[in-house]
Length: 291
Ligand code: NAP
Image 1 (cartoon, helix red, strand yellow):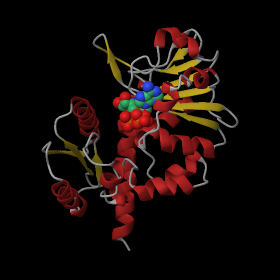
Image 2 (tube, helix red, strand yellow):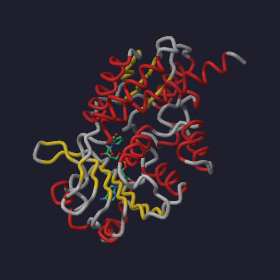
Image 3 (tube, rainbow, N blue to C red):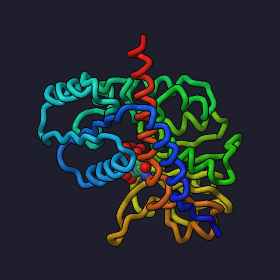
């Protein structure tokens, strides 16, 4: 029977660490931009706000009109980039333009989600270990949260392990795959085409570590899971009115050795890593000012 992670203990430790680090800075300021009123974005922003309040960080939601033009959007982002009081910026999905056009507008020194092409590019060419790469770069908070949760399982050392990642977004699947491959895991990246071809069960069956970030309730069936596998569920969906993950938890429990569930696993810790990246942005800002 699998151990089911309850990330509250980690949350408490990480929160204390953040509070200690934040004492060395004047109040930091996070701008969180959203376009239109998307329910999932509002849920995400309200959890960011709660953590910001607990940490004493100034949180500024910037809500733009659904039909704002791209030119208007560029001007709004420029204003936030140029505002010296703003330490970090997030542009929440969804938005009606290609990701690369939107994410490249963010000042890369304030890019606390690590999505600017320069930050993703640096991550792509880095050959450092996971721990060292995190010191220099903005790693997307969800990825940091996944790596932290992985370190709580007994498969902390991924060397030579077969990892299947389901989902290939620039916020989760892509950077995660690069970092794990750098740590010498054998990584398979699966996505919509893998599912459509009927190959997903095979990739799940061979995984020592399965990480799923799709957002389709119970996409991964419990009986696909390898005996003793570590499962990190990241996807957030709703079934019968309840929040649930991509993996069929009850069935998976019987086969896996460790499960980070939804809710209660990675998602709880992600905002803390976001604010840790904000501290990194503040440190960079201080270095730039002192030059
Ligand atoms: P995203 O950009 O929509 O990416 C989802 C990925 O899943 C895409 O690569 C998509 O492929 C793939 N996909 C879609 N249907 C699939 C299927 N049937 N089989 C295999 N792959 C499929 O979303 P995201 O921002 O990465 O977020 C993914 C999920 O994680 C969402 O539920 C989100 O709410 C959750 N999330 C959780 C946290 C947390 O901290 N817990 C943080 C961020 C996101 P295509 O693009 O080709 O369709």
